[in-house]
Image 1: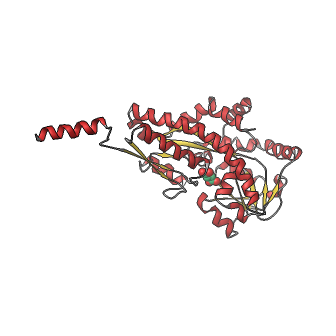
Image 2: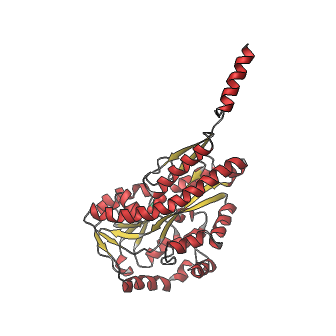
Image 3: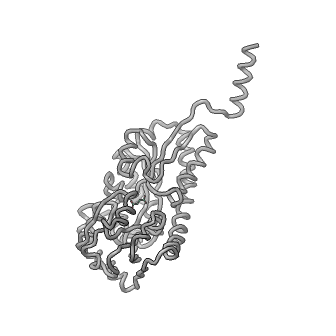
Length: 325
Ligand code: SIN
């Protein structure tokens, strides 16, 4: 009788797909849940949990509540988290080639950026990441960055002179400011709003979405539409963790990531467009657009200085990006 009951219980759980052991995976990132990256991560979680019928559970740690991006890179290696989605500029501490996205005016538009993800450049970045112990599972968008500041109207690169600008800290970004005698101040994302509020820095460069969701615009007087570098994300795991997964689990994760990636690209474009108007609606920030002629001045200024960036990124890779245009 007892055996019969046990057998019935076993069959009930077996056929109803109740899982006995659950794989818990943690993802860390630094933006809000309503940003393109934040929303795509939530979407990824939903698909993975649904497709694995609950066998995989994903916990999301947004807004740097667990780790900032640089800490997350160490936490991945230590197995404290299983995924992170740092910006290319921060992951460039590990794989310097990611700094191509920071070189001012190298990428002309989002199609150009996408051609890099899915061609030779993408493969190179995947291989370099793997050599350093990270699996580059996807490359996500945010968008092109613009400058905001509290001191003066920026029209030309030289106008940045003397301004203290918060940066994400890649060598290329910092150099691109030093060239114009601006002062790069590298600080974690989550404290930027406080630094702006306290007037400890004069400005920063970011996408409309980050400027809006982090409330940077509330403490800035000027926004110049420079589109001078691209903010994208490396969705990464550690090689050690990835190797431990069975094929079925990998497939669930990769399929979910493919869907989340398509969703993320659409979101990034739409949310940045919307947030540009939200910034204007909710503040008196002065928007400074650049005419085609002014934009050419920025481009030509930086093209003339490209050789300083070759110290950080191999010229051959930069030339390859030019070929993709
Ligand atoms: C992010 O978008 O993940 C953060 C970018 C930054 O640190 O400026």
